Image (cartoon, rainbow, N blue to C red):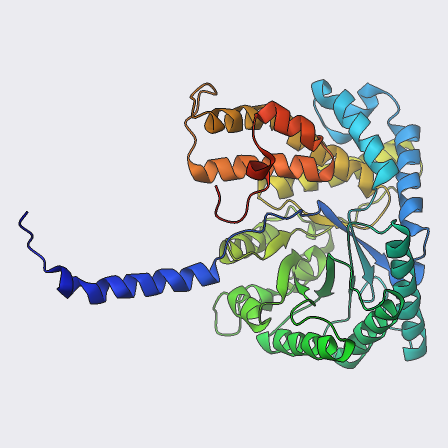
Length: 421
């Protein structure tokens, strides 16, 4: 066979291709296959107690019983198809009785305010005791953590002190063990230097507390314009994540600080505003494939009273926001009030169940190398279909055994190691 190019002369070019591919693979290791919560519930530290989560679940159930007791009212309240009402209603009730909160964040920032040092120290210790006792008693939420104060507010000393006091008190009561899905939320970021400083704080705490290197990870709260575009006009998030030295686990969007900083009027400060879509799309594009998970923000709409009209209005507003998030690929958000729990789960379950039959059929066809589903899916689409099924299983929309049976796949396919599918 005759060739026009000398292979030896091409080796340097191929080496360059390999080098760049390796750099890209290190920067984009792919998404985590572990469970992602559908929400994070922020609770002010001074109002957090051993009974808080159960009380939220009980109040959410009471609201359902009082204001969505029939299939018709349930479907209307959350804007879901009547064909899904029975299944969604049953699953939401079970969820609120057994796991009303998936991810708990004890808040020492905006929801808590500025207190004297003695008071904040006291609340940090009290919160740590509650978390430790819940872990020991098997009643802890699947994910847990705290939000500290922002460095850009000039409260860096108080921020670090609270984290130190909380962790020290917690580990004293857990024999030095950190919860498996523990996270710290780092808010209002304006510069990579703040992220780098916080990452160094985490490293020093690990050493002082005898923790494994890298176990303390944190979430960036994207709630300033400087978190989207830096002072030089560049996309800011890659540098912010890089400054975290491998400790950044997620990026959570902050609706109200961001829209206020953009100059929007109060009535326009909502998660569905186009300004928020822009920020989320930047987050999504710059962090795709990096392993940094995305979360949307919250709604400030809560029932104005304990009437069906007031409760339904709040539910409908919240449900619309949750659907907007999911359409844009944000599968997690913040919740702040017991009334948000029914609308969060009802909306998420309806979205997941509505597309589940098709997803299962297409996964089954792919597994059998068949065209029976009417689609010849590419591997990337199969990964998305499997992610849909995993989300449904993880949040309780369907039992894993049922999903595996209906999809006709092995458990290892549903929860693969990175790169399997």
